[in-house]
Length: 406
Image 1 (tube, rainbow, N blue to C red):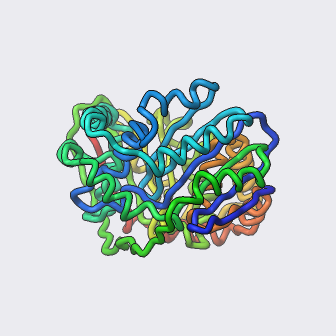
Image 2 (image 1 turned 90 degrees about the vertical axis):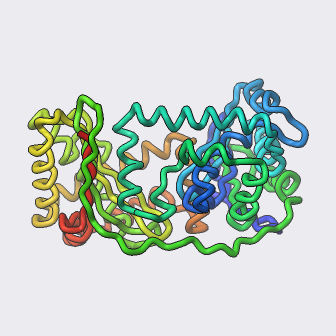
Image 3 (image 1 turned 120 degrees about the horizontal axis):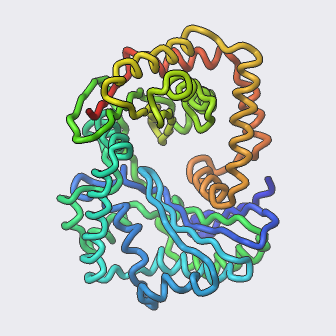
C-alpha cells in the first residue's frame, strides 16, 4: 500500500494512504483512552468524545454538526481503552473543510457549562441502556473481573456516580495530561495529493504548541482466575470465559489472531459456531475475540443459550479448546484457516473507514503500517505447531476465568 508520512515540528504525525476514490476519510487519533483515567475520572475520556462537539472558540454546536452535513459529509468519534479518535468522511473537494473542522474541535473546544450538564444525562442514559443488553454488558463486567482493581478493567462509559462530577476544569485537566502532540496522529485515506495535505496540516495543526508525553501507564499484574455467577432477570443464560493473552507488541499476536478466528471468529464455519449452533442447536450467538492492549491482552469466548443447556454448552466449548490444545491442524486445515483470515482482512480493508482506523492505530503503536502483502506473509509463516503452542498457553483451562448471567 502506497502511504506517505510527515512529522510536524510539534511532533504530530501525518500519514496518508492513497486510494482511488471520490470519497475521502480523515481523522485525528490520540493515544489516550479510559485506562488513562484516575479513579475520580472514570468515564471522562468517553465524555470528552461527547462534549467536544458542543462548541469551539468560533463555532456553536449547530455549526459544528452542520459544517460537513451541509456538503453530504459526516463527522463522528469513538473512544476505546487506549485511544480516542475524531474522524470524518466527505467528498474529495471538501478535504480542507474537514481538516479545519477536526482541528477546531480538537484544539479549540470550549466545553460550555450548559452543554456539559445536558450531556451528563445523555451519557447516563447510554450507561443505563447497556443494562437492557446483557450480551453487551457481560463483556464489560468480565473485563472488570479479569483486570480487577486496574483502570484497564473499568468500562469505558463510566458510572452514574462519576459522570455528575465532570466539569470544564476536569475535562481540560484530563486533556492536558493525556492529549500530547507526539502521541497524536492525523490520518487520511483518499486521493487528495499528499503535498497539499502537508501544507494544510502545517496551517491547521502546525501552530499547536509542542506538548510531549512523559506519562507511564500503570501495568497490570497479579491476575487470578475466578468464576462468578450473577443472577439476572433474563430469558437466556449468558456465559463468557477467557484468559489473559498477548500484548500488541508480542510477536505471537498474529498466531493468536489466526487461532481465534479459527475458534470463534466471524466465519460461520468457526469451530464454536459449528459445534454449539450448527450441530447441537444450543446457541444463536457464539463467538470468540482477541483484544491486544499495549502491555496486556485478553481472549474471550461468549455465548447465550437456554438456561437448561448452559452446562452442556460449556462442556462443548471446553471440548473444542481441548482439540486445539492437543491436536495439531492438518496441512489442509491450516491452509484453509490462513486463506480465510487473509480474505477477511482484504474485505475489511475495502471499507475505507476501517482502513482509516487501522492506519491511525498502527502509527500510534508501531509508527508504521503493514500492507496486506506483509500481513499475508506473516500469516503464511505460522505453523501448526506454533498454533498448538499458543493454544496450550492461552486456552489453558486452569488459567481461565468465567462469568455467567443466569
